Length: 459
Image 1 (cartoon, rainbow, N blue to C red):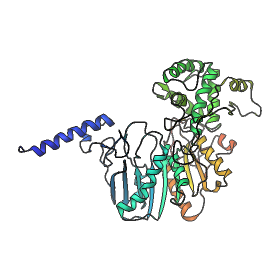
Image 2: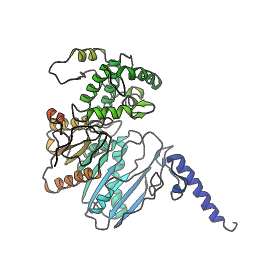
Image 3: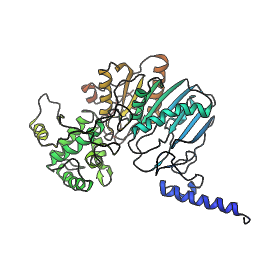
Image 4: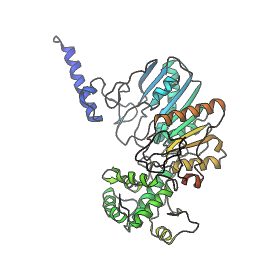
């Protein structure tokens, strides 16, 4: 080999890694030089697994002061583990949310990483072996971290907590029901706690908009055809603003389908209809009619609105406008259901075996606040209301929690598990409480300028 050949090979390899990382993640070449190239998955043909020692922006993943880390790839999924030197014997599993349908998986760190380590908690997270709305894979790979933690650290956790954002909240709710003896407590945040009801909500938003705008639509519908229909729906409803009469009715319908009359909804509705995805206002971009009704994770259509009666008011008797909407709206029949196991879209039964404390933004119209209410109703039907606490946060964003809100929730969950004293929450099934001008004030720690509502009372 020529003198200096090894150095040349190293430099060439660094350039290749830099280019690959730039193509995959859009990171600067210099930042990517410390990362290794994604490796082919051993379990999912066509998938790549990104370096767990590097964040997607090229930042190296290193241990916090007073902690040590373990990383690696196992069964097609990348993992991270961090354990403080003064470990309290508790482990937190973090489940990430939906990351699209790309074929590169990567692991990230939880927002409460510093809080966990500072308070003696170890944590672990998985990339999962797949992307897409694959909740079952997320459950399997997250649960596997418990055994993996013992293997790579030499220690078994005395108590394990499960937490996750968005789709990770769905994973959290399914995991504690699938493996009820494995966990001491759970904290889903901005979570899909209504399984298929999320897809029903997406359907409802699209078909009621079309009906009120007088624009014919169908199920299924080709994405290009739906985009053309949306181009007609927007001016008929006055989107994003100012709303027409029909547009105001649609806003009222979406408000009730997403959790009921509540403070800040007007600003939330404007925020989510101004936001764009794929060239469409966000609430139209998630129409399940364009993707088969199951987010591509299983055959068949999960959505159904045959027995849904859409309301724009809370009057005892529907108005003429409401009767007309329900006559005109497209009706859809499901051909698939939530899976009782871990296939397709796994079912959440609402039978928490351990304390569950949840956080949710009341202005979130991606995974709406109604997901909390659905879980609360199921828990009540199953005699498990005493194991569920929900906290409403005054925000328009999806998963936009302040660290103080997350920290307070986690600390209160741990205290509940350790002492048996159930912490306070919000009365999310009380329509009058939800409609109160001060709803969400009790547990909101940060002011969001985009959330426009009457100010909270001084504390």
